[in-house]
Length: 330
Image (cartoon, rainbow, N blue to C red; front, top):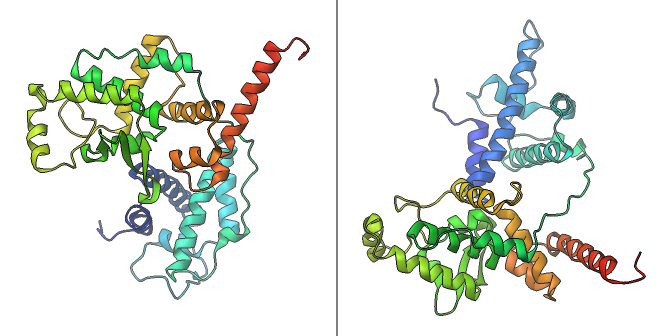
């Protein structure tokens, strides 16, 4: 088997190291393209037999597989057949839209590299989607969740610090696990966050989160289980802030598993995710009078329109409060 990188491999590499996509996002793009490749393979098998020679764009490289040539020479009709194929799986409009977005990026990349001369995605429309409001939970439920970890133990204190940090800063879980010790400024009470596209921002750390992080680090220092990590931090400040039981960096999936455990203990909705705490952070800020531009900066949104969806949640809460409290509301 050839070790030559495929078009998909090269594209994923471009996303990771030139566009600075997170590993998780790059894997999602890769999975969508692998599904596209499987579809094209199936079409080739169905059409096996004597055929007219394929007209290949002059930019297509030698040594590519037949399927790769099919990807690079596909027209809008091929893409539409792929979308019809997806429709048979009953995907939601949101999932289909994501797969279309993947193909848009892929073909735009091919055009940019001079590999193809026409972009079939220019003739493909994204299906309309119903806008889903982000889910937020009340302050009372947040308090209940954050009180679940037993902070008498190092790992329990770590979990309390993680949950407090997620809610205090609104960071994405991928940003949280990417935090290093030298990103924490205890004196300035801030965290340096590396967001999407490697854009950095500074976010304040609230007093409750700060106390939880201090307590976690106080227990971590003398704990014999993390001796190797402490020795490394003496020469390398870029060690993980939140560590796993072996002293290594936590994964996003591990944080989700920890959260699931505390949701069960608290008797809360199992669909609550780390991102729910981010949504709750933004909604509660707006509920209490924060301006939209400040919330945008804290969340690390590039566009203000992305942040504006939270104003709908705040308006809904105002209506609910009004309906419940005003004697002539209903």
